[in-house]
Image (cartoon, rainbow, N blue to C red; front, top):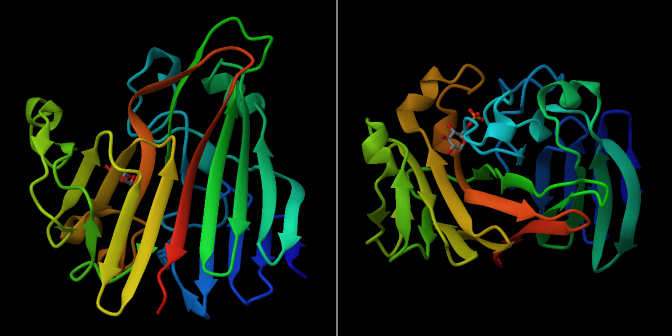
Length: 288
Ligand SMILES: O=P(O)(O)OC[C@H]1O[C@H](O)[C@H](O)[C@@H](O)[C@@H]1O
């Protein structure tokens, strides 16, 4: 069966053998296999029972990135509610050699309404091709709404890769904000990336602004390409030893991944009533 659907999980299987697993909790993609090899990192200590956001895979960040900074988001937790709500399976969109694709949705439920008063529509489309995984977040501001919807969005991939060897390009020349700086003032000061290839051998939490929308993630013998649409920024995160302070991080888990997260996180998307916005990332395994 190319699409298998249980009460908690959707599994996609492409005719050429690649697979993807999406939990309805947070629509978190928790597995993506190409040529039998797992491409995403999920901590063995991650809670998969819906009690907290999943440490790994591809959590969806919406409508705020990090701690809320917009008044509309003041009651929300870090990274918003999309990653910690249970979504609904909507439909199979496509099922052929080109791709196996499903749509999931999240409506404002009582819990969301108690922390977030804005009307919205949210759907997520996951498409699996032979060597490729696309994840698209669709945000709508209903026509009945009286004002613009202001939000941030980010697709928080955890790419399985050895963090002491992995490199990311091309970020050279971009402005970025270094969240590992000690003071708020230093965090708010833009730096300029001078490296041809960025590594995460030391604790890294950098928000690159107005980036290229096309990144190469490479390590010996392997490569992954990431393309983004409407997600103008990109966050590179790996905590290194600091990761030992994260409760649901497995022992030395930070050695096994890099996050290269396309997002719209500097400023806010402003969506007028009756309009839609789509943010997309496409992950492609380079020929191995
Ligand atoms: O621990 P979480 O809320 O899942 O956040 C995990 C990480 O997400 C992003 O990459 C942020 O830039 C980091 O500052 C944050 O630590």
